[in-house]
Image (cartoon, rainbow, N blue to C red):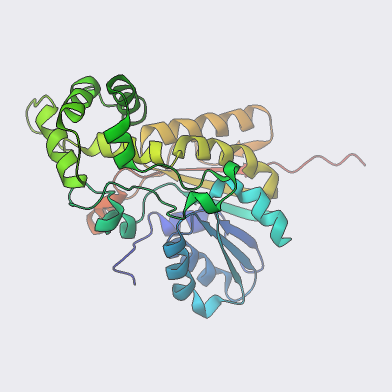
Length: 309
């Protein structure tokens, strides 16, 4: 299992969240259970951990991976944006620590059938939650349109705006024009080829030409920025005074949103920032796990209410 998923900044997250025996913790994006496993080992058999994930397959893998701690663990197939509702329903809380890792898991990236990677020829799906949305309440917004429906159905201008807004892609109009001309886009590999042909090439490029396009589509399909906003709004109420909150982000849009929210809470004297600068992986971790390269972690602590007595 370890070869499938290497958690990013796991020991650092456990340190900054002050994971200890007897505490109540929430891994709001439990994924394949990598961070949760590190936390549970520090908890030494005492305490409670709740894990949420919108990916049902990830939940099942995490359940198997954390089997030795099953008495302490509750795993829920839910989006992290509903953290408050889940904890209320379970009758658990307030939490001593909450973690959210906003990255896509290695399992999702490496699954050809998911279409997250431009290095595959899989279908352009990109949904993290693949439940049939017909079976869900309208307000759930857990499973929507696929990336294929966007690239083959959106108007050229709408597509260009999406690539610029979510992918910060400066060649967005050229790429959108090329996509529309190449329709129907058959699969992830076809899209990557079309995008690479449309982009301006200026010297050596560190990123694959399609990186930003695939990022933008993934964000749009999964409503990632909207879900993150809900999570950032709802989480403070789930933490106990002195409770800590860590968020790992992987691109500038996410990090800016997290930074703004943490700064707002600090100005309101509701939280204090524990990390003045972002925590990033060491070169050794990046060498061992290249996907950790862009990770940034911010941590804040809820301020205890002053006694009125």
